[in-house]
Length: 197
Image (cartoon, rainbow, N blue to C red; front, side, top):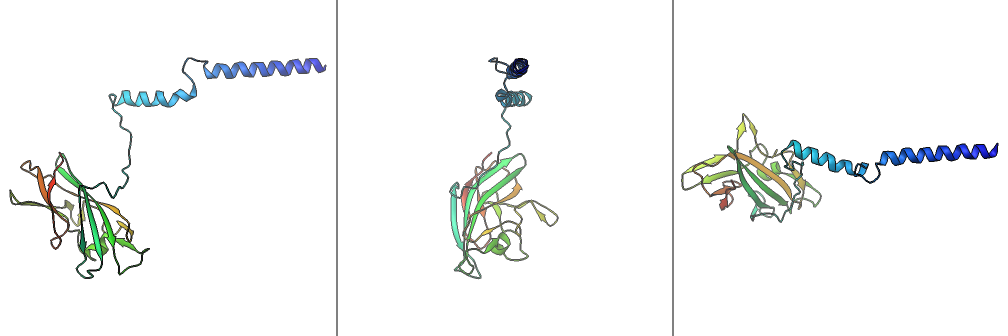
């Protein structure tokens, strides 16, 4: 009786192993570990072999082509560093990307500072492009009162910490290779900024 129970147990164990080895597919490359590769390959086939993976930009305050530090008009001891990352044209629009770092001595190190604090309550962002050669100015694209740019109230950071900002303009005409970029009328402009097309 004991022997028949042991024999039944062994048969069940052997059957289980056979089922498991059948599922693993032996060595023909159909194991579960190969599934992500199959999925990735299928995704690439659907997109013509292109890798259209979603990516998220990481804010790198050193990844800038130019930067300047300006003083606030009301409190000159408070400064803001603007780092210009790029001005890129895609179709009919141009997107300006910036790294903005407020350094307000009038505020504590843990104080939240927004673009609204930098530009003043109730004022719009001062970004604009100026093509001096063709005498054209490009302001931020808007839909009524809504600017196609970083929200000045919600875009904020801790004092002394960089934050990303952007603004969208109509693409500069006349195929200009460079253009001047202003943060505001009262601060020096970035001159001869490359227009990436």
